[in-house]
Amino acid sequence: ATPTAIMVGTGLGAKRGVLFKNAMALETSARVQTVVMDKTGTLTKGEPEVTDVVTDGLEETELLRLVSAVERESEHPLAQAIVAYAAGRGLDAVRAERFENVPGHGAIAEVGGRRVLVGNRRLLEREGVDLGPLAARRDELAATGRTAVIAAIDGRAAALIGVADAPRETSEAAVAALHDLGVQVVMLTGDNRATAERIAARLGIDTVIAEVLPGDKAAKIAELQRDGRKVAMVGDGVNDAPALAQADLGIAIGAGTDVAIETADVVLMRSDPLDVPTALRVGRGTLRKMR
Ligand code: ADP
Ligand code: MG
Image (cartoon, rainbow, N blue to C red; front, top):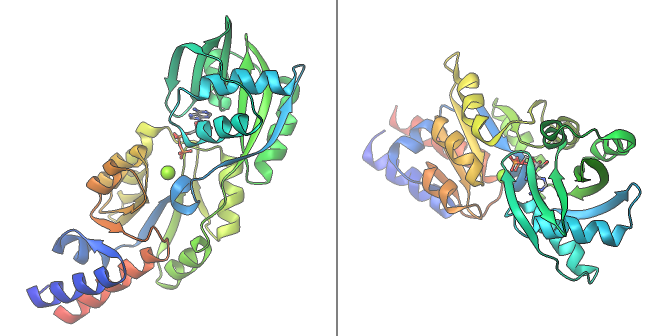
């Protein structure tokens, strides 16, 4: 592109809160064929809230006391939702010991001499704990698009905590606008398949890559690039940084983590998913002007 076209394109983007970090980013935007979107914090608000607590053979307050003690040590958004919920119930804090964060799985700690696991099915599998009678309720929660956080105490599944994270208001419109541009839209998430598919269906996304471990997101992008497709990745989290770097175009949500913003080629200052199709349109406009 000519320097003038680049300047105009960059200026147009800036006016809409789309920050192109360099000329390459602007040119690549015009060529994107697939847009991969992280679920939590990108398509959704990233403000999960506890909606259900299902216990099996344990008092709810006791369960919440144990689980929130573990989650207080974690920085995961799901953990923060659970801690906030327990605090809202007026539960006093208990201390967790030997805390262990298991990325993409959950967290483990000892509370009052009891070993508490909090996380997903993969964490239970890893620790050899069976979900037992709670399995049916877990499927029900997932079918409504909620994430079921599982708690196990001393080797036995003791509760499910349903957590909902509402889609951003403009996510559905953003997906539609990308489809109008002829772009394929893919959801990429560490969350479980049933939950991810429910939310994807609501937003009009037909391709879902779920249950991806944090370290595997970049490899999934590479797979999508294999036949020479130009792939953009939109993300907000620390976990997304390698995928943003791997993509032909990394797009960070402005409200996201510093690492995501630093790694990306484009930053959406308004954190609005609708600015993804805007970025691609600005890129296409710029490319047209230089021909
Ligand atoms: P994502 O942000 O895309 O959901 P993560 O890799 O951060 O991806 O998390 C993947 C999954 O691991 C979560 O959906 C959740 O099921 C589980 N998980 C991770 N950390 C925790 C935690 N502290 N408490 C409960 N669940 C967790
Ligand atoms: Mg995220």
